[in-house]
Length: 154
Image 1 (tube, one colour):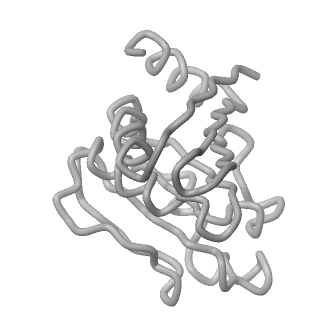
Image 2 (cartoon, one colour):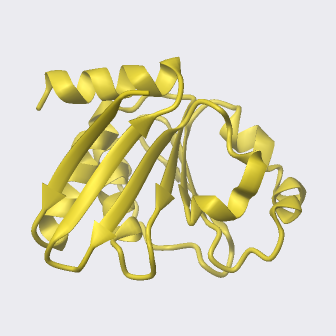
Protein backbone atom coordinates (compact mmCIF):
# COMPACT_ATOMS: atom_id res chain seq x y z
CA UNK A 1 0.00 0.00 0.00
CA UNK A 2 1.28 3.38 -0.99
CA UNK A 3 0.80 6.30 1.37
CA UNK A 4 1.17 10.06 1.14
CA UNK A 5 0.88 12.48 4.02
CA UNK A 6 -0.01 16.18 3.95
CA UNK A 7 -0.20 18.87 6.61
CA UNK A 8 -2.62 21.78 6.30
CA UNK A 9 -3.03 24.89 8.40
CA UNK A 10 -6.62 26.04 8.18
CA UNK A 11 -9.73 25.16 6.20
CA UNK A 12 -8.54 27.02 3.09
CA UNK A 13 -5.44 24.84 2.79
CA UNK A 14 -7.51 21.70 3.40
CA UNK A 15 -9.92 22.70 0.64
CA UNK A 16 -7.02 23.55 -1.66
CA UNK A 17 -5.47 20.13 -1.03
CA UNK A 18 -8.88 18.62 -1.83
CA UNK A 19 -8.84 20.43 -5.16
CA UNK A 20 -5.43 18.90 -5.97
CA UNK A 21 -6.77 15.48 -5.07
CA UNK A 22 -9.86 16.07 -7.21
CA UNK A 23 -7.73 16.92 -10.23
CA UNK A 24 -5.90 13.58 -9.79
CA UNK A 25 -9.10 11.52 -9.62
CA UNK A 26 -10.65 9.62 -12.48
CA UNK A 27 -13.97 7.89 -12.94
CA UNK A 28 -14.54 4.69 -10.95
CA UNK A 29 -12.64 5.96 -7.90
CA UNK A 30 -13.92 5.66 -4.35
CA UNK A 31 -12.59 8.09 -1.76
CA UNK A 32 -13.20 6.90 1.82
CA UNK A 33 -12.91 9.68 4.40
CA UNK A 34 -12.16 8.95 8.05
CA UNK A 35 -11.99 11.49 10.88
CA UNK A 36 -13.90 12.68 13.89
CA UNK A 37 -16.67 15.24 14.01
CA UNK A 38 -15.31 18.55 12.73
CA UNK A 39 -12.13 16.99 11.32
CA UNK A 40 -12.61 18.63 7.91
CA UNK A 41 -14.17 15.85 5.83
CA UNK A 42 -16.75 18.13 4.21
CA UNK A 43 -14.18 20.90 3.72
CA UNK A 44 -11.92 18.43 1.91
CA UNK A 45 -14.89 17.17 -0.12
CA UNK A 46 -15.69 20.71 -1.28
CA UNK A 47 -12.15 20.99 -2.63
CA UNK A 48 -12.28 17.55 -4.27
CA UNK A 49 -15.53 18.54 -5.99
CA UNK A 50 -13.95 21.79 -7.20
CA UNK A 51 -11.02 19.78 -8.61
CA UNK A 52 -13.58 17.64 -10.45
CA UNK A 53 -15.16 20.81 -11.95
CA UNK A 54 -18.39 20.58 -9.95
CA UNK A 55 -20.10 23.99 -10.16
CA UNK A 56 -22.62 23.25 -7.37
CA UNK A 57 -22.37 24.34 -3.77
CA UNK A 58 -21.26 21.17 -2.00
CA UNK A 59 -22.44 20.53 1.54
CA UNK A 60 -22.81 17.45 3.66
CA UNK A 61 -25.79 15.22 2.80
CA UNK A 62 -26.25 14.25 6.45
CA UNK A 63 -30.03 13.87 6.29
CA UNK A 64 -30.33 12.42 2.77
CA UNK A 65 -27.15 10.28 2.90
CA UNK A 66 -26.21 11.09 -0.72
CA UNK A 67 -25.93 14.04 -3.09
CA UNK A 68 -25.14 13.74 -6.79
CA UNK A 69 -23.16 16.42 -8.64
CA UNK A 70 -22.21 16.69 -12.31
CA UNK A 71 -18.66 17.80 -12.96
CA UNK A 72 -15.91 16.45 -15.18
CA UNK A 73 -17.39 13.12 -14.07
CA UNK A 74 -20.39 12.40 -11.85
CA UNK A 75 -19.59 12.87 -8.15
CA UNK A 76 -21.56 10.89 -5.58
CA UNK A 77 -21.14 12.31 -2.10
CA UNK A 78 -22.24 10.05 0.76
CA UNK A 79 -22.38 11.07 4.42
CA UNK A 80 -22.91 7.98 6.58
CA UNK A 81 -22.93 9.76 9.95
CA UNK A 82 -26.59 8.90 10.61
CA UNK A 83 -26.37 5.37 9.19
CA UNK A 84 -27.49 2.74 11.71
CA UNK A 85 -26.58 -0.39 9.76
CA UNK A 86 -24.39 -0.85 6.65
CA UNK A 87 -27.15 -3.00 5.11
CA UNK A 88 -29.23 0.20 4.74
CA UNK A 89 -26.83 1.22 1.97
CA UNK A 90 -28.11 -1.58 -0.22
CA UNK A 91 -31.55 0.11 -0.29
CA UNK A 92 -29.83 3.16 -1.83
CA UNK A 93 -28.31 1.20 -4.73
CA UNK A 94 -24.96 1.88 -3.06
CA UNK A 95 -23.14 -0.72 -5.15
CA UNK A 96 -24.26 0.99 -8.38
CA UNK A 97 -22.45 4.12 -7.17
CA UNK A 98 -19.23 2.60 -5.84
CA UNK A 99 -18.78 0.13 -8.69
CA UNK A 100 -20.11 2.37 -11.46
CA UNK A 101 -18.75 5.33 -13.40
CA UNK A 102 -18.04 8.48 -11.48
CA UNK A 103 -16.22 9.37 -8.28
CA UNK A 104 -17.76 8.32 -4.98
CA UNK A 105 -16.77 10.24 -1.84
CA UNK A 106 -17.83 8.66 1.44
CA UNK A 107 -17.72 10.62 4.70
CA UNK A 108 -17.74 8.44 7.85
CA UNK A 109 -16.59 5.55 5.64
CA UNK A 110 -16.06 3.26 8.64
CA UNK A 111 -19.86 3.02 8.93
CA UNK A 112 -20.01 1.20 5.57
CA UNK A 113 -18.29 -1.78 7.18
CA UNK A 114 -17.36 -4.50 4.72
CA UNK A 115 -19.33 -2.78 1.94
CA UNK A 116 -16.35 -0.55 1.12
CA UNK A 117 -14.73 -1.67 -2.14
CA UNK A 118 -11.30 -3.29 -1.86
CA UNK A 119 -9.68 -0.66 -4.11
CA UNK A 120 -10.27 2.74 -2.58
CA UNK A 121 -8.37 5.88 -1.67
CA UNK A 122 -8.51 6.17 2.11
CA UNK A 123 -7.99 9.60 3.63
CA UNK A 124 -7.58 9.81 7.40
CA UNK A 125 -7.81 13.30 8.86
CA UNK A 126 -6.44 14.06 12.30
CA UNK A 127 -5.82 17.29 14.16
CA UNK A 128 -7.78 20.43 14.83
CA UNK A 129 -9.32 23.16 12.69
CA UNK A 130 -6.06 25.00 12.13
CA UNK A 131 -3.61 22.07 12.12
CA UNK A 132 -4.55 18.93 10.21
CA UNK A 133 -2.67 15.90 9.00
CA UNK A 134 -4.17 14.02 6.08
CA UNK A 135 -2.84 10.56 5.38
CA UNK A 136 -3.78 9.14 1.98
CA UNK A 137 -3.56 5.38 1.50
CA UNK A 138 -4.09 3.49 -1.74
CA UNK A 139 -5.58 0.03 -1.29
CA UNK A 140 -5.40 -1.20 -4.89
CA UNK A 141 -4.13 -0.43 -8.40
CA UNK A 142 -6.74 2.21 -9.26
CA UNK A 143 -6.13 4.22 -6.09
CA UNK A 144 -2.35 3.69 -6.49
CA UNK A 145 -2.59 5.50 -9.83
CA UNK A 146 -4.26 8.44 -8.07
CA UNK A 147 -1.40 8.71 -5.58
CA UNK A 148 1.12 8.44 -8.42
CA UNK A 149 -0.54 11.40 -10.16
CA UNK A 150 -0.59 13.35 -6.89
CA UNK A 151 3.12 12.74 -6.21
CA UNK A 152 4.10 13.79 -9.73
CA UNK A 153 2.16 17.06 -9.29
CA UNK A 154 3.40 17.73 -5.74
